[in-house]
Amino acid sequence: MDNSAIAGAFFADRPASGVDLRLFGRFAGSWELDCTEYEPDGTTSVRRGEWHFGYALGGHATTDVWILPGVEHGVSVRFPDPGAGPGVWRSTWVGPGRRRTHTFRAAAEGTEIVLDGGDLRWTFSDITADAFRWRNEARQPDGTWVVQQTFEVWRRR
Image (cartoon, rainbow, N blue to C red; front, side):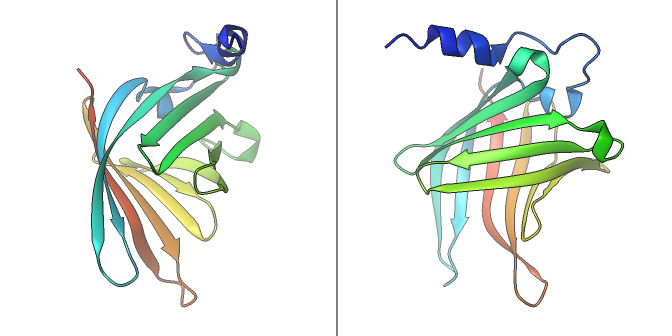
């Protein structure tokens, strides 16, 4: 099977003219990560993974793939949606390893990027040119948030 036609149709070298993809476009490139998973019993496990960001769909979106070997290969497609409000993005994540999909509205909140999925919240924080943190939180029945995963992420050299 030749996947080059699919890859050529999906990936883009840069944002399309007039499309502002800087919110997530700043992450374009390859990254290493340490993923800490927090279990309900208080135990944690840490796995090394990787995360790759780029442009897609004619330069109208960003995409990324994160890989936790033996656990998950997840993919996101994100795009700005000015009709949903100033600075609002739409984001969909698909994780076939754990058979999950999630949709979010995303926006900058101060120095962070917050993806709101209702009962799920993903946050990019401490963002620099070469590192950032990512947090996955789930809303509990009482309205509080519990951390499920954190990533410490650094740019691959």
